[in-house]
Image (tube, rainbow, N blue to C red; front, side, top):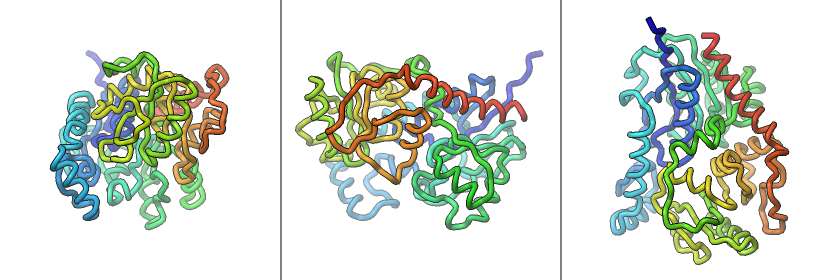
Amino acid sequence: MENRKKKCGIVTFHSSHNYGSVLQAYAMVRVMQKMGLDAELIDFRHPRTTDMYEWRLWSTYKNWKWNLRELVLRGLFSFGKKREQVFSDFIENVLKKSKRVKDKNDIPDIYDILVCGSDQIWNPKASGENDPIYYLDFGTTTCKFSYAASSGSVRFGDENPELFKKYLQNLKSIGVRERFMQEYIKEELGLVSEINPDPTFLLNASEWSEIEKPYKGLPDNYLLIYTIKRPKETINFAHQVAVSLNLPTVQICNDRDLNALMHKDVDYRLMNVSPQQFLWLFHHASFIVTNTFHGNMFSVIYRKNFVHYGINSSDTRISTLHDEIRLKNKIVSSFEIDQRIIDYNLIEENVAYYCKCGLNFIQANINDD
């Protein structure tokens, strides 16, 4: 008789319509499956994380100015509807999930292993509150651990440190994504934690290419722009780099940012890019300019020449990544920099070691169960 696979439930942000969230969720499940587990995402969707992205004409979580702007863009021009469709297709048809649950009492006690992470699950600004589900405050299994959990730039335990200490003490192991979180947990809560690489980093380029879908109609060589904050500044910078490299520019657009959509220095503006096409665009770019964490992640995964434009002291995810793999001089704030080729041979061992640490952390926790 064949042995039953251990069942693993994963709690994360998987229903947000942004590339990092859905791809890290996919990676978490895939990594656990590769380790021999029957893994799935526990399909809990906090109202705030879904309301932020759903195609609707009014949001209860935004101010009236934002709602008025969305009313015009979405009501008159249907901006965002196709984007929601491509993300919903990925979430519903690619991600392996449980049945939808409303709260922790709705989660069946069927899991041998429970994992929370990654993404900003411990950021109350992201979910609107600190829901106990994101700390695995449910189920009878003793094998509960966090992996690459993040609070973004928020010191997540400041409001009620004793409660957070109680939550974390119930975890078998604590894995976090940023160094500042590791330091906070040690200094303020007296607990030990380990820094983990984002789960997207635990799959290699070949594994990611399995779900890629080509974006047709683009030149063979191009400079890819992927930005969230300060798109106008980043596009200006990317244009300078593209001119110096004699490359056309391709931008993965956020349909809510009119400044980016109307920027004159972009050759190809891509709307409604699916997560699978997002991967393909990174894989086939000749050079990448980004100011996002997962833009950095996938640039390294696909071994691309890239720069991160803009120094954001509040986003320690990017500096943590660069420090861990010893990647130097790729965070820039002006064009006065030599856009030299990254010699990945020099950091290959660091990348491999960083990934191995993440995999070993997971393996140690599931093996001890």
